Image (cartoon, rainbow, N blue to C red):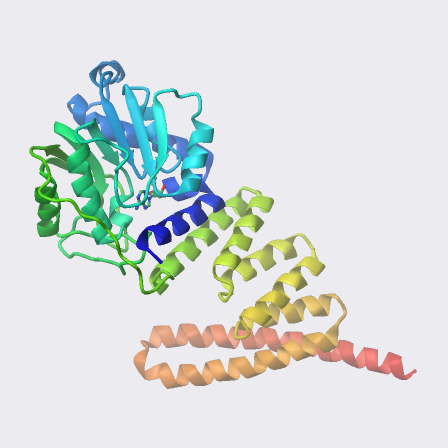
Length: 407
Ligand SMILES: C[S@@+](CC[C@H](N)C(=O)[O-])C[C@H]1O[C@@H](n2cnc3c(N)ncnc32)[C@H](O)[C@@H]1O
């Protein structure tokens, strides 16, 4: 598979789940925060050109004869509001699903265009045709060779003395996820940053921190503004087949966790249909992880839907046979359905798994801190206590059934 196809596939999948969530990644994961993030980011983008302060009437005047490019525009979160100020606002994105949604949402904005591209070039734009290029939350997620190719393309399509203002991560320690990944963040070093600009004929003229601290990277992202001083020194064609079609394990976990977060937010707002839809997408994405099934189980149980719960848990136990939580839940639900023999079978499996888990914990004891050991041990003991309670109930019920059958 070509790297371009992988990026398209990944972003089309995300767009089909929820394009608003995947482009804006707000903590609240709702429409209101999507809209307010668009306003904040558009103002953050334009402010620099207005002398640092937001001034609506100056903005209306300053860019009215200019053409804007929004690279990786998603559903036009910024392309559409920015069209209010520019003569022409062009959004380009690798995902056909994002572009379809952008066109649907903003069909009334006649000076905004949305174009699906290859994922590595801007061949639809002529040399020197754009005054200002924008890119928010895109370039740092791309494989490094794709980012390099885009810098050269931006250098080509900008007018001389045109600007490129984009969001990026720069840190004391560079970090580059695996080169087939499309979501994890790349952190660039100062030397790499300088090189990207020099090759593209761009010069950094300003940088400022964006008010968001990433606790894992221990960094804030930057708005970087660069000016085109000359034509790029080269062009770069990305023509790379990827060895691994699947993203790295870290990235798969990141996408999966973000889906669980979205489902949780829907549930908090009592949007149960949406929560369940997202959970089923998470299961389709990672069928061999238990968390989404367990979350869905808790939703169905809160609705007293035992039949639906059993269906989810049976799927979980066949897909993730080592999930002790899954077997315990299933035993509990079989009990509630007066099926104690089925519950007993689940509890037997649980017993074996818990013993194995405890043995593994003892083996790894030397590598763990006392606190970590105690935490894991107490989790196993709690599950075992729960198992014992269920076992007693199931044994009593099964005895009653046997007695009744004898009579
Ligand atoms: C996190 S979203 C940000 C969207 C938009 N810039 C915004 O702020 O609302 C990342 C976007 O980049 C797009 N994208 C990812 N890889 C791309 C590539 N190689 N070329 C163009 N767009 C890409 C995705 O489809 C997605 O719409």
